[in-house]
Structures are given as structure tokens and as C-alpha cells.
Length: 278
Image (spheres, helix red, strand yellow):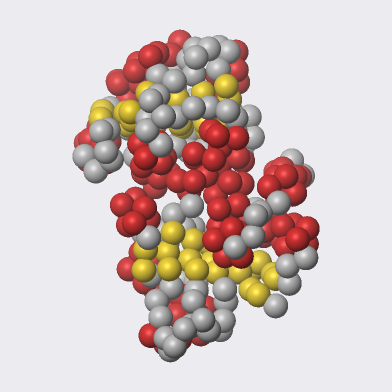
């Protein structure tokens, strides 16, 4: 039996276990998905211990996505984003490399979660103008993902300097404060990569008057599943994509990295949404 899991602190709220275990059951994969909650000071021990125990792969969440970068061999995208959320362990079985000399591989599937979510909804990114609200971890993944897909990216953040700093490393991007949100009027893509709308469901990061019918809006918030931003975007005629799609499709990417199998996306989606609405 293969063991996969999630490392973070806290992880009790995670929806990854039912989503992944539904996929294992659907495809007849002999595997389990479990959660681990080490203290921040014990992250290195947790990663090396998972490797020693033969765990096949890990998802990584808050607060460890940046720190784990130093403990793995990151792929180029994860290195550029500066965060890892998926670890693949290599037991050395296919070559002569001793296990103790191998280094786990690190990936960032949050970026794929963004691009796959837009693709799933028929949104063309190449050549588009995108606005990303937020310059934290989710914002970094979204900005790189959209730029790599061919969009021109503007990052708007409460602290303009942080947006400008991120824009400096994302190809062709620009950055500014929240006073630059009016650029949404001419954009084709909008990503809310902040938590606004989660703690206070009636809040939105974007004034409704900036939303329009030629826009596709992805809100990374998935609780509630329908945020005020998405309601107002729908009222304006925009394509709306809830945060569960990003959560699902980053998990799909991780599943495929770990197993080499095509993920049963609909089964995983049903399991995720069943738990979100339970």
C-alpha cells in the first residue's frame, strides 16, 4: 500500500483526504491519504522521516510552503514561485542511487490549479490582460501561472511595494496598490488571491463597478463557495469560477505527479463539493 499525505499546521480543516481517497477508490489504487501536523521547528525531521518511512508523496500547506523549498529539489516553476506544495519521494528502486543520497522532488501545483481552472471554463489566457489581487503565496502562484500562459499580468495589493516587488520577478508584470484596481475595467481575467470574502462573507476585494461581461473571475476563496465577488461578477455577466476548482485542480496535478495516472477529475470534484456543502 502506498501512503500519501498532507503536512501543515493546522491541517484539521483540510479537504484533501476525501478528495484523494475518492480517486484511489475509483481507480483501484491501493493507497491512503493521511495528515501530519508537525511543529514548525520539526519540518526537516518530518520530511526526512516521511522519506525514511517510505511515504510516496506529500502535499504541503501553511505555514511550510516556503520553508520546505530548502529541503527538496524544486522544479524550475516552484523555484521561481518560491514555494513548494507537492513533494514526490524517490526510493531509488529504478537506479543505483542509494535512498539516503536521493533528494525529494518539489513542485508547485497551485499554478496548475489556476490555469486548469480557467481552461476548464473555456477561458483563453494567451494574449489576455489579467489582474491578480494579492501578492502573497496564492498571488505569486497565480501571477506566474498567468504570465507563463501568455497573459499580461498586473498585481494589485494593499501594500503597493509588495506588488511591485512580485511584479519585478514575474515576466512582463506590473504592480501597484489597490488604487490600481480600476485596471479591471479593461481586463479579461481577474483572480482574487486574498482571503477577503472568507472571514467576512459580505466583503469583496473589488468594487462592483469594475466588473463587466468580458471578464472571467476566479476567486481563490472556497468557503463560502459563492462569495460576494462571484455574485457581483455573475450579475455583471462575467464568467465565474469558484475557489473549489483551484483547490480541486491543484490536487489533480499532485495526484498525477505521484501516480502517473490520469486523475478521475469528476469523482474528485464530487467528493470535494460533497464535503464543502456538508
